[in-house]
Length: 183
Image (cartoon, rainbow, N blue to C red):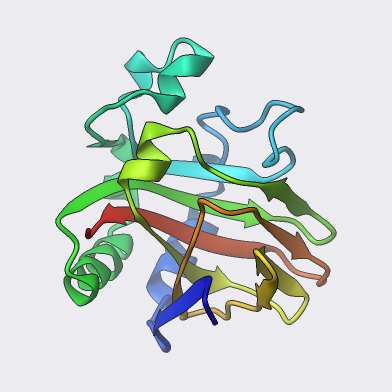
């Protein structure tokens, strides 16, 4: 595959999954992607690391240069820490950018879009999906390729080309999205 790069299989995500299940209040504290015009509308998010929330007062602020910082949620999901740093080591990353955990309900989707034009998306040249909960109906599309990312799989994909996700299954699809710079 040219748009998906499997990093590893078999990450133990059981503790992270349990932490997410035990803290449903973490979802949708930040609604930056919840606007009806967003390709992510209808998807629930947990923002773990990104530009300081206090600096995100206008839409253009999401696309400007910034240093990412951890949100307080980072300390509420301690099982995420070894996953993030193991992947950074494996990929020889030099900087950790944004981290999101996303949930797509059954029948939900992320509409086709690309992330070009955003400083973060272009500067953090490696975007890794880590499957936390999945089903065979959760299909990721990137360019002319498609892939089901199973729980415990880590996959890099090219977010500079058109990509989307469909959850045609009967359970939520939960994914940690970890952005880093390695080039």
